[in-house]
Figure 1 (cartoon, rainbow, N blue to C red):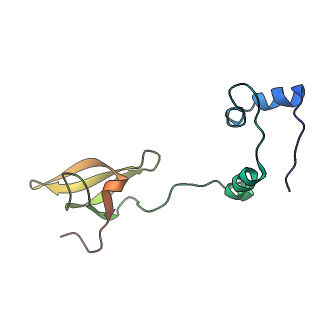
Figure 2: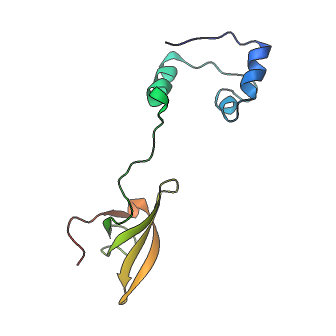
Length: 116
């Protein structure tokens, strides 16, 4: 159920004390009303206290193949994922040694076959 409020001075200053929320709900100077369809989308994204998280496409230990960049075609194993930065640290065999390389997640895909 949606509830609407009349913005008065007391409510304005109460909202202003909530970190980060106030910045989302204001323009340069004044609070901004939220349209019905925007509120429905917001509520759908946060139902039952849940928020959208990053996809679990890659995880540590996954076998991957580099699909872009100068290392294209090499296969390796993910050692670490940074979902916030969308980066993966991968152990690759290069020049006869295992090298750890930091790559953008868009540069790799899961290997379909075992490592060669």
